[in-house]
Length: 206
Image (tube, rainbow, N blue to C red):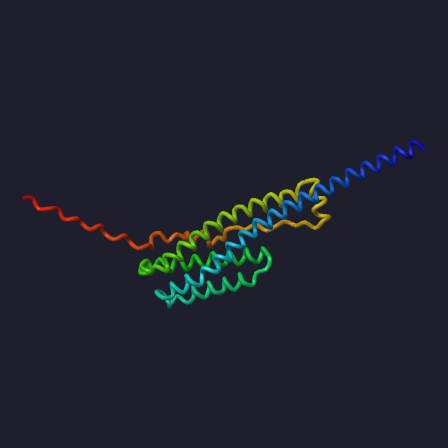
Protein backbone atom coordinates (compact mmCIF):
# COMPACT_ATOMS: atom_id res chain seq x y z
CA UNK A 1 0.00 0.00 0.00
CA UNK A 2 2.75 2.41 1.00
CA UNK A 3 4.62 1.66 -2.20
CA UNK A 4 1.55 2.51 -4.29
CA UNK A 5 1.20 5.83 -2.47
CA UNK A 6 4.86 6.65 -3.08
CA UNK A 7 4.53 5.86 -6.78
CA UNK A 8 1.43 8.04 -6.97
CA UNK A 9 3.22 10.92 -5.25
CA UNK A 10 6.15 10.63 -7.62
CA UNK A 11 3.81 10.67 -10.61
CA UNK A 12 1.95 13.72 -9.23
CA UNK A 13 5.23 15.58 -8.62
CA UNK A 14 6.45 14.78 -12.14
CA UNK A 15 3.16 15.97 -13.60
CA UNK A 16 3.39 19.21 -11.63
CA UNK A 17 6.95 19.76 -12.88
CA UNK A 18 5.91 19.10 -16.47
CA UNK A 19 2.84 21.35 -16.21
CA UNK A 20 4.91 24.08 -14.55
CA UNK A 21 7.54 23.83 -17.26
CA UNK A 22 4.87 23.88 -19.94
CA UNK A 23 3.20 26.99 -18.49
CA UNK A 24 6.53 28.75 -18.06
CA UNK A 25 7.55 28.02 -21.62
CA UNK A 26 4.17 29.08 -22.97
CA UNK A 27 4.19 32.37 -21.08
CA UNK A 28 7.76 33.05 -22.17
CA UNK A 29 6.87 32.42 -25.81
CA UNK A 30 3.80 34.64 -25.59
CA UNK A 31 5.83 37.47 -24.03
CA UNK A 32 8.54 37.26 -26.69
CA UNK A 33 6.02 37.08 -29.51
CA UNK A 34 4.19 40.09 -28.07
CA UNK A 35 7.46 42.04 -28.09
CA UNK A 36 7.90 41.14 -31.76
CA UNK A 37 4.38 42.29 -32.63
CA UNK A 38 4.79 45.51 -30.64
CA UNK A 39 8.06 46.29 -32.41
CA UNK A 40 6.48 45.62 -35.80
CA UNK A 41 3.59 47.95 -34.96
CA UNK A 42 6.11 50.81 -34.83
CA UNK A 43 7.62 49.67 -38.14
CA UNK A 44 4.13 49.63 -39.63
CA UNK A 45 3.43 53.14 -38.33
CA UNK A 46 6.54 54.50 -40.03
CA UNK A 47 5.78 52.62 -43.28
CA UNK A 48 2.30 54.14 -43.32
CA UNK A 49 3.64 57.60 -42.52
CA UNK A 50 6.13 57.34 -45.37
CA UNK A 51 3.41 56.13 -47.72
CA UNK A 52 1.28 59.13 -46.75
CA UNK A 53 4.13 61.57 -47.39
CA UNK A 54 5.05 60.19 -50.83
CA UNK A 55 2.04 61.56 -52.82
CA UNK A 56 2.80 65.16 -51.84
CA UNK A 57 6.46 64.67 -52.67
CA UNK A 58 5.59 63.14 -56.04
CA UNK A 59 3.22 65.98 -56.90
CA UNK A 60 5.94 68.51 -56.09
CA UNK A 61 8.48 66.68 -58.24
CA UNK A 62 5.96 66.37 -61.08
CA UNK A 63 5.89 70.15 -61.27
CA UNK A 64 9.52 70.00 -62.44
CA UNK A 65 9.79 66.53 -63.99
CA UNK A 66 6.38 65.60 -65.36
CA UNK A 67 7.95 63.34 -67.98
CA UNK A 68 9.26 60.82 -65.42
CA UNK A 69 6.13 58.70 -65.69
CA UNK A 70 7.84 55.34 -65.19
CA UNK A 71 9.17 56.38 -61.79
CA UNK A 72 5.82 57.81 -60.72
CA UNK A 73 4.13 54.59 -61.84
CA UNK A 74 6.50 52.49 -59.71
CA UNK A 75 5.72 54.61 -56.68
CA UNK A 76 1.98 54.32 -57.30
CA UNK A 77 2.31 50.54 -57.55
CA UNK A 78 4.32 50.39 -54.32
CA UNK A 79 1.70 52.46 -52.48
CA UNK A 80 -1.08 50.21 -53.80
CA UNK A 81 0.88 47.17 -52.59
CA UNK A 82 1.23 48.76 -49.16
CA UNK A 83 -2.48 49.58 -49.01
CA UNK A 84 -3.38 45.96 -49.77
CA UNK A 85 -0.85 44.42 -47.36
CA UNK A 86 -2.31 42.63 -44.35
CA UNK A 87 0.33 40.34 -42.88
CA UNK A 88 3.80 41.40 -41.68
CA UNK A 89 5.31 39.48 -44.61
CA UNK A 90 3.15 41.44 -47.08
CA UNK A 91 3.96 44.77 -45.43
CA UNK A 92 7.68 44.03 -45.40
CA UNK A 93 7.55 43.17 -49.11
CA UNK A 94 5.59 46.36 -49.81
CA UNK A 95 8.11 48.37 -47.80
CA UNK A 96 10.95 46.96 -49.85
CA UNK A 97 9.12 47.81 -53.07
CA UNK A 98 8.77 51.38 -51.82
CA UNK A 99 12.49 51.44 -50.92
CA UNK A 100 13.30 50.62 -54.54
CA UNK A 101 10.78 53.07 -56.01
CA UNK A 102 11.87 55.85 -53.69
CA UNK A 103 15.50 55.25 -54.61
CA UNK A 104 14.62 55.76 -58.28
CA UNK A 105 12.76 58.96 -57.40
CA UNK A 106 15.81 60.31 -55.60
CA UNK A 107 17.90 59.75 -58.70
CA UNK A 108 15.36 61.78 -60.68
CA UNK A 109 15.42 64.53 -58.07
CA UNK A 110 19.18 64.85 -58.36
CA UNK A 111 18.74 65.64 -62.05
CA UNK A 112 16.49 68.65 -61.35
CA UNK A 113 18.45 71.17 -59.26
CA UNK A 114 15.69 73.74 -59.73
CA UNK A 115 13.75 71.84 -57.05
CA UNK A 116 16.03 73.45 -54.49
CA UNK A 117 14.08 76.69 -54.83
CA UNK A 118 10.79 75.06 -53.79
CA UNK A 119 9.84 75.71 -50.17
CA UNK A 120 7.22 72.95 -50.31
CA UNK A 121 9.87 70.47 -51.44
CA UNK A 122 12.22 71.56 -48.64
CA UNK A 123 9.50 70.90 -46.06
CA UNK A 124 8.64 67.51 -47.52
CA UNK A 125 12.28 66.45 -47.74
CA UNK A 126 12.72 67.17 -44.03
CA UNK A 127 9.62 65.17 -43.12
CA UNK A 128 10.66 62.25 -45.32
CA UNK A 129 14.22 62.22 -43.99
CA UNK A 130 12.92 62.14 -40.42
CA UNK A 131 10.54 59.31 -41.26
CA UNK A 132 13.30 57.29 -42.91
CA UNK A 133 15.46 57.68 -39.81
CA UNK A 134 12.65 56.55 -37.51
CA UNK A 135 11.89 53.64 -39.83
CA UNK A 136 15.52 52.54 -39.73
CA UNK A 137 15.52 52.58 -35.92
CA UNK A 138 12.19 50.73 -35.73
CA UNK A 139 13.33 48.13 -38.27
CA UNK A 140 16.53 47.47 -36.31
CA UNK A 141 14.63 47.04 -33.05
CA UNK A 142 12.09 44.75 -34.73
CA UNK A 143 14.82 42.55 -36.20
CA UNK A 144 16.44 42.26 -32.76
CA UNK A 145 13.16 41.08 -31.23
CA UNK A 146 12.62 38.63 -34.10
CA UNK A 147 16.11 37.24 -33.59
CA UNK A 148 15.44 36.67 -29.88
CA UNK A 149 12.08 35.01 -30.51
CA UNK A 150 13.27 32.80 -33.35
CA UNK A 151 16.23 31.63 -31.27
CA UNK A 152 13.91 30.84 -28.35
CA UNK A 153 11.55 28.62 -30.33
CA UNK A 154 14.52 26.62 -31.64
CA UNK A 155 16.19 26.24 -28.24
CA UNK A 156 15.77 22.98 -26.30
CA UNK A 157 13.52 22.26 -24.46
CA UNK A 158 11.37 25.23 -25.45
CA UNK A 159 11.31 23.97 -29.05
CA UNK A 160 9.25 20.97 -27.88
CA UNK A 161 6.49 23.21 -26.54
CA UNK A 162 6.71 25.75 -29.36
CA UNK A 163 6.10 23.01 -31.92
CA UNK A 164 3.19 21.62 -29.90
CA UNK A 165 1.61 25.06 -29.49
CA UNK A 166 2.11 26.14 -33.11
CA UNK A 167 4.59 28.98 -32.58
CA UNK A 168 6.42 29.67 -35.84
CA UNK A 169 9.41 31.81 -36.76
CA UNK A 170 8.66 35.49 -37.40
CA UNK A 171 9.97 37.16 -40.59
CA UNK A 172 12.94 39.50 -40.50
CA UNK A 173 12.78 42.86 -42.27
CA UNK A 174 15.96 42.92 -44.38
CA UNK A 175 17.06 45.95 -46.35
CA UNK A 176 16.50 45.14 -50.01
CA UNK A 177 19.52 44.86 -52.32
CA UNK A 178 18.23 47.70 -54.49
CA UNK A 179 17.71 49.92 -51.46
CA UNK A 180 21.33 49.39 -50.43
CA UNK A 181 22.45 50.61 -53.86
CA UNK A 182 20.20 53.67 -54.04
CA UNK A 183 21.10 57.06 -52.61
CA UNK A 184 20.39 57.73 -48.97
CA UNK A 185 17.38 59.92 -48.29
CA UNK A 186 19.39 63.05 -47.74
CA UNK A 187 18.55 66.10 -49.79
CA UNK A 188 21.16 68.33 -48.21
CA UNK A 189 22.81 68.93 -51.56
CA UNK A 190 19.53 70.19 -52.99
CA UNK A 191 18.90 72.90 -50.43
CA UNK A 192 18.96 76.50 -51.61
CA UNK A 193 22.42 77.94 -51.50
CA UNK A 194 22.76 80.70 -48.87
CA UNK A 195 22.69 84.21 -50.22
CA UNK A 196 26.16 85.72 -50.56
CA UNK A 197 27.06 88.11 -47.79
CA UNK A 198 26.77 91.73 -48.79
CA UNK A 199 30.00 93.58 -48.37
CA UNK A 200 29.72 96.52 -45.98
CA UNK A 201 31.28 99.60 -47.59
CA UNK A 202 34.09 101.07 -45.55
CA UNK A 203 33.99 104.73 -44.64
CA UNK A 204 36.20 106.86 -46.82
CA UNK A 205 39.37 108.08 -45.19
CA UNK A 206 39.50 111.87 -44.59
